[in-house]
Amino acid sequence: MIIKMDNKEVIIKPGERVDDLHRNNYKIIQNKEQFCFGMDAVLLSSYAKVLAGEKVLDLGTGTGIIPILLEAKTDGSHYTGLEIQSKSVDMARRSLLLNKQEDKIDIVEGDIKEASKVFGVASFDVVTSNPPYMTNKHGLINPDTAKAIARHEILCSLEDVIREGSKLLKQKGRFYMVHRPFRLVEIISTCSKYKLEAKRMRLVYPYIDKEPNMVLIECIKGGGSNLKVEAPLIVYKEPGNYTDEILEIYGY
Figure 1 (cartoon, rainbow, N blue to C red):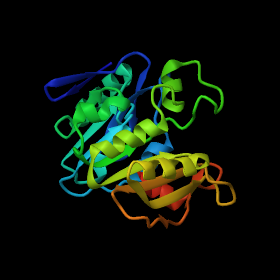
Figure 2: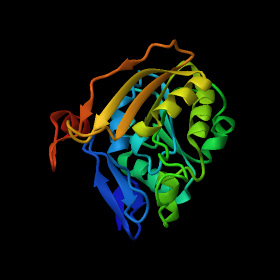
Figure 3: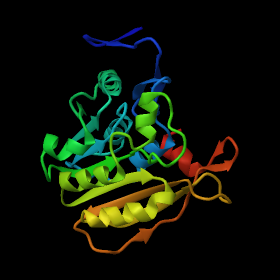
């Protein structure tokens, strides 16, 4: 399928789909055989604060969902996504053309472990990441390579993400991440090791009477040790029925 955009043509390849993001009429190209974004990325894009004129980098951007949503929601001067998988990079770049965002967002193909060498130290005001949650000791590794890389720490570790995030940030820059609560102690201690001090944290619960299954965290490079634990975010009122806050975050 070919979608015509002014004088450009955006090709939708076999197996791909175009999803509506409910923001600025933006859309995203995804392939169900690859890793598709989930609620965690949407929640992170809402949690991250980007001020007017700031430069933002998303580490492990996949098909570009976080930069695309941040550009829709915030007034930053420029947004960049770094992704190692070439098929995801290709889909992300075509989504930018589809949304006419190519002047505001760059998608760079590269390795998170080398990010500070690619972009230079202290080159961003904000760094975000929705990294792989599982180590090789956690659960079964998906036989599909693209999905395995997105879910398990095969090509980069939590420490890689945090170390490079710290290097890339300017002093007092902000680091935002969504992860799993069972690794929270490791997350905070590793962030502190690299001079990223946790300042805000919000736990996400699928239902009000269940345990949290996600955590959103904000760290400041060179910040003081003063952590604010925010009110919990509840996803569902009941099965299949989102809470009002989730509906607002999604833009429904």
